[in-house]
Length: 495
Image 1 (tube, rainbow, N blue to C red):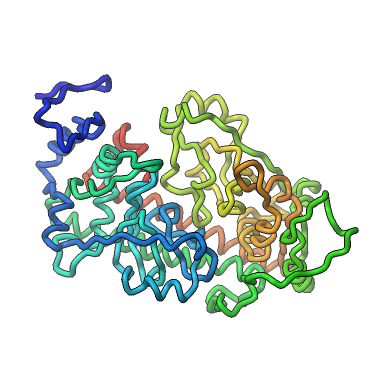
Image 2: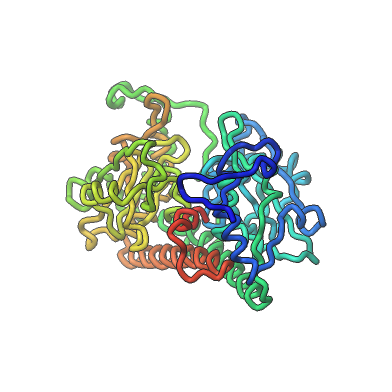
């Protein structure tokens, strides 16, 4: 019997595999926990399922940065996968021509799984694609798993198995550094999947995964419509989304414009800062919307703004408390997989200063493509610390502005475009800085409409959070765990 504890363990030289000398690769806790599961689970090697034809695998492509922003087709990167789904607003889009060049090779279909192979803390993130996600391309750091029709495992069950604490722990043990990025390489073949032995349990897990994925996608698509409804681009939430290819909501640029020298502000000479298309769009909203700057709302005491703290890399991974960074916001909510966690001691030191409450909003201040990304905090998200690259916005006078209405307004096309126009490069990173105060919000004049928007946003966000939490419970159900082990709590945050 192998004796081990947190200080170390002994390993026979004959047990070393492939010249791998990294201790975590042989973590004896993993073997012990797998042995405990043998009584109730069939332990199946993922590589065997692949070799036997039950699962097909394929990697994506690198299309090159010159293709970024050329069109509306999502190019899925590792950071675009979280909470068992793809972001509603992936960072990069490509043209129809580029899509057609790669589409037949990548052959993305509903029911496929995407699995992050490269990327340090993102490794192991997975999602199940639906019909709404079928027209995409994906990068080479992502694997596509396709389950055969007569396979021993279904796509939904495979997603749950890959999310189980035992499998997540194996993924962490098997990833390694290649050049400047971590990867699991082909070691995903070595993952041991714990299949519940009872068919009733497997069927229940499969049904639960399908329900969560389906409902979250439906609500995600609703999130795409709410900002357009708020701005008056569509008349209601059931309306079809505009064709972006032929739509002026996403202008591809203009040949230039003239601006009077006297209109220059703060010695800013960046043309996009004065984008006349944005000004024209705002003028077109005057009849139906009250145009109010964020600065005016601050002066009136409706809003308060605060930034977070930088705790330093040395405290990463020291405890269970999420340290929220700019990349931890997705689809108007916090990811269930915050990259870093810190100790209880550090949380106690800063919790009163940061004072995070339900119905606070986070908005990304620093981070190039992430700038302007926002989310709503619920009662499940308040026990966190957050970084200096985020603004925390609190609505102090909710009778004048509902927090959920504010969330929808921050995601309106005209507001997002203002943020893009106002961000600038500071040192090596882009930032919005205090220019966010200049952003003008289009608040509908119709009080009834404002209330309906706020209600729809609130119900959608809260429903998605409940489903996000249900996904965590499903991953526990795979192993028959009622409450997560203390050492698995951080791993569960990576679902």
